[in-house]
Each structure stands twice: as C-alpha cells, then as structure tokens.
Image 1 (cartoon, rainbow over the protein chains, first blue to last red):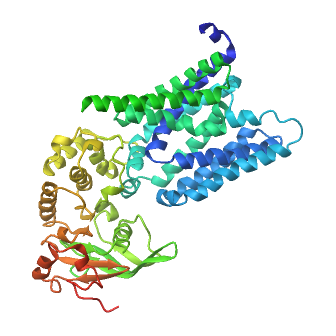
Image 2 (cartoon, one colour; image 1 turned 90 degrees about the vertical axis):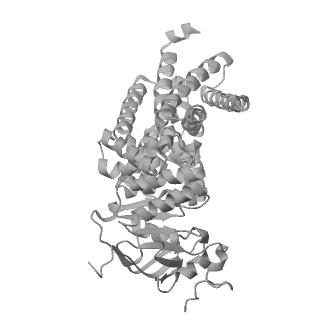
Image 3 (cartoon, chains in turn purple, cyan; image 1 turned 120 degrees about the horizontal axis):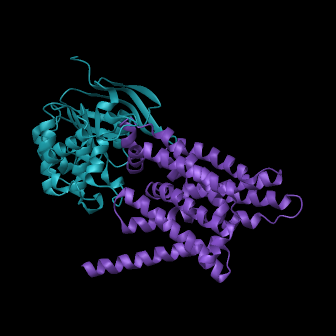
Length: 271
Length: 250
C-alpha cells in the first residue's frame, strides 16, 4: 500500500486529510460541547443552495457556498443560543431548502452536470495543491484565533450568560467562530461532500469526549481520531474500490461504536 | 445615598414572544438587603434576575445600577440544572471563569487568579475538589463551585437562582453560613421555589408572578417565616387556600 504514496493525488489526499482533521478537531470540539451540531448541519446544507446557484451562473461553486454559509454564520452568531435552539424547526427548513435550491439550480444548469455527486459526497482524491495551501492557511488562522481567545471560547461554551456578565464580547466571538465554521465547511465539502461534512466535525469529538476529560486533550485527541478516520477511510476506499467520502464516515462511525463498547466494558470491569 | 438603592427597577416590563412575563415591576435593592424571590415556575423570577444582570433588556421602564463597576460588580449563580455536567472542565477551571472580567481579553489567567481560586475554594470547603472534573461532583458540590465562581470576583451584589435545588444538607448549611457572612457586607437576592429554603435571615420576601409584590419585614413576621418553613411549597403560592402570605389586591 505504501507505494500508493508515489501518486501525487494520493499524497495530496493524505495531506488534506491531516489538515482537515486538525481543523475539525478544534472546531468540532466546540461545536459538540456547545451543542451547535444541528446549527452547523443547517449551515452546511444551506450552503449547497449557494453552490448550486453559482454553478448555474458559471461562477466558482465553492464561492457561492461560502457566501451563503458566511451570511448565515453572521446571522446565527448574532442570535441568542436559547432562541436558536427554540428555532430548531426553522433551521430544519433552512437545511432542506438549501439542498432543494441547490439541486434545482444544478438541474437547470446548461449542459452536462458531472459535479453534482462531487459536492454531495465529496472527492478527496480530486484535491489540488491550491486546496492544500488554502487548508493549511485555514488551519493556521483557526488555531491562532482559538489560542488567542481560548479562555473566552471555553467560557462561552460552558456558560454563555456568565461569560457575557464577565464582559466577554460573546456576540463578536460567536460570529467569528461561526465564520470559521462556515469557511471550514466549504473546504470540507470538497473532501466528504455536503451530506457528510457534519459527521467529520462531530464524530472525532464525540469519540474523544468518551475517552479523555480535559478540554485540551479532547481537542488534540479529536485531531488524531480525525486523521485515523480520513487516512483509514482512504485506505479502505482504495482496497474495496468504494467512494472515499462515505467510507471515511463509516470508518469514523465504526471507531465511535468501538470506543463506546470498550468504554462500557471498562466501566463494567471497574465496578 | 440613603434613599437611593443600589439597584432600582422603575416600571420595568418584559415580554417574550408577545407574552408578558413581567409588568410594571418596581423593585429596589438596598445595601445589606436579603431578598428572597418566590413564585410559581414561569412567573418571571429568573427573567427578573436576567434583567438586572443585563442579559435581557426590558421593553419599557428603566433599571438603574449604582454599583462601583456597574453590572460587573454583580455576582451571579445561575440555575445549575441548565448545565452540561459532562463538560470536560475541572473545578479550578470553572471557578477561574469568575476572573474573566479582571483578566480581560488577550491576557491569560495568572498565578494571582490561581491563588484567588484556592482561597475561595477553601472558604466554600471545596478545596479538596479543585482537580476533580465537574462530571464527578454531586449536585451540592457543583452548586458550591458555581457560588465560588461568583464570589471570586468580589461582587457588590450577589444574585442566586435556585441555589438550594436538590442539594444535600451539608452544602445547604455551608451555603447559608457563607451567605449570612456575606450579607454583613453586601446585599443578596435569592430566587427559590422551595419554601423550606427560605432562611430566617431573609429580610424581605418578594413574590414574583408577572407582577412583583414586596413583603417588607414588617409585613412578613418571623412567625410567618416559621410557618413557611416545613410547609409544602403550594402553601405560600398566591390563590391557594392555605395561604401564608395575604392575597394581593390585583
């Protein structure tokens, strides 16, 4: 299998898997502990509307995805979290409507439309060098911002109202966070597609939260689990000749299941 | 300063989704006050606290805060039932959040902050738990952690929302003695729906159910408070036959 790395596109896929795992480890941990999973899912699916529209107009589809995700990020970041949770149904509508609009635009797009599946399920093997540079920059920006405002982000995640009373600029930081999430979602759409993006953000932190207790350890372990998921998924996808996106997610879900079972067994043994 | 309260609410109204939660609320919190807010669930007790804290803004009326650092001088202990207990944080880290305002952005917590954490933890008798994760604590212990987080910033007013809900007797005794000591210096406002939680130290009882009625010490005698003790919570709710407090003329 090691000789596979001689292929540029395989090497790029491994690199982007590592870069994306770092991104997902950091952002996903906050998304999971702050219960923003459903909202992030809404953003990524709504982004598909922008992808379809820009595809139809002959523009860069990912720019369209980012435009929609970015606007939503600002709106959702400014909205109070309790209100957001009460508006779950509205986010559900956004979720479905984004997909519907995207598919309608693509259906009406002139000529042959081979890329639809790419955006739905992603293609980690089609990653280019500019994608890698973009991902590396994004990693640096996200890690930088999280390090600088680490104590504030942790405080907001744990108790938003208390952070507000303490004078933490909760709204601004939430907008920044949601913007980072939406840029990352657009990048991840290239890897695993719209449908599976949310799994890459949530599965690694869910596994880590079961295994370690320190917040920083959860983030670091999530990065590692993400790498196991993406690189393991790539290997299986090659060996079994299956599309990479779904295999990556299935590997992640399998690791999640195994961690859960082993944790239960360990707890039984300890009592 | 005599006639001016530290916190004054004048004709404050708040509605949520067109439902009026609080209407024309007048309330003054004075130096060394000990207010106990009672009332049914959904009556607006927590909303009232959040208005004072500035988490919510009133649709009409005004709230005047006369504290040294404005609202920053208010210590807040929220309902702990709303917390995610599995959150991957240690007790130290949670208490230290009470120093966020003092630290400000871009400055990490310092040794001073850690010393302050140790000091307050000792006082609230949770110093042996500092390295525990919050998921490992009992209800009473977690409640004490949240109180420590509020007290570490040396507040000039302490607001507690249901601090006695589902806590053990030990924690309740520690809580009461800490609050009594604090009340020598600063006013306290405590929300509860648990009649047995009303401490004899309470100086005024405030009934909150859309409207706010204040029972000054003259109105609610010690005898009345004694009656409140040990009675099921229904007994002091308005409009129920076995009323302890007199019904208000609406």
